[in-house]
Length: 500
Image (cartoon, rainbow, N blue to C red; front, side, top):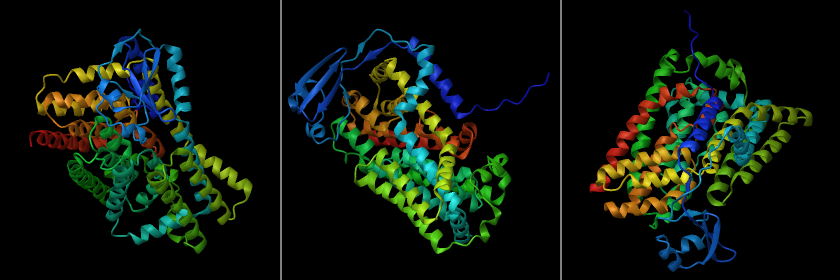
């Protein structure tokens, strides 16, 4: 009997399978909910939501103390904590809300609607890339860069990984990295590496930066606030972890990159070489293209779009609307500089956006998994049981258990800020019962989420892979040795930290 070789499913199929399994979980896992507390800046009061009832409470420190929430009042009034937080010891089991076939089918649609902000960012970036390809600036710029880096291509790996990690550790550079793949992957290919090297530098750089966040307001600061401690507590340990993990990861990427450069057949994605080069418009004729002053100006505008985006996000409280607008304006300016006709501009922009439509669907389907969790009321149940299994543990076992608990929870709650406000008021008091500092819980939250982010299918990895047309199975083959190494290093570091 002959069997056809089974092909690993696409990212969309993987996510739909996960959504189906989560829908089944809502039939098995009991529904439950913690009471939540929200600060209303307009009324200068707290709103406590409990099951079907809503109560208004005075915005005072005494109110927080009475609710066993050990967070300074100013963290709410300053806007540092603006999302609803869970109230400790208020978990109640509710009537189950199992999600049936209709809810399962609706989840991708609801997810796409919920993720409309990042989806439009992706589509507009695709349009911008389409305009850039039409001008020829990419081809000329890549040819120039490949020649400039000849013999020193390894610098590109170190530079990109470090810069992206810097963005991750300071302001949470994560979703924004989707914009970098279409631009930087061709550069890595022109440097005689494969697309996996470029993917790893960008994605792992972001993962490591957010995992070892130092001043990131969307994880370190908001989690520390929700745990009732100063964000600088434990900062030195996180900075040391950032250096260690970044060094290990860069060494790992360089080792793989050197092997591929010496022998392209050693590439994990060698069978896709021609397909990926065609996808990113890599041409042998690039070397003959001249980088004119007009093309230099176009590349400058293109680069400034990203610089402005980063400054806006890190300094001006920008989010997806402002970021997307920046890239749209950049595309229009480049269209004028390139003297592109209106009809050609629209066609190229639409074609570029269309090439990333599959990525947009992946983001929406992934968000749909969270929708099923929320509608099925099982997120808080998972959190409640996770918080109870650590009772009676010694310090070493406790801290490593929390690492894996947060890794597991991040599958269902991939948002770092969402995880922080939902879990910290419940999880951080556990540190007091074991005799460790609350910064240990903040660290396990960051490390657990960051580590699992390497492979988490409900995070950004599937969307990132879809841009490069690399299968999830090939990514796992590449990253698992690094993933296991970093887990072991993290466990050792956490264990040492609680006994020092």
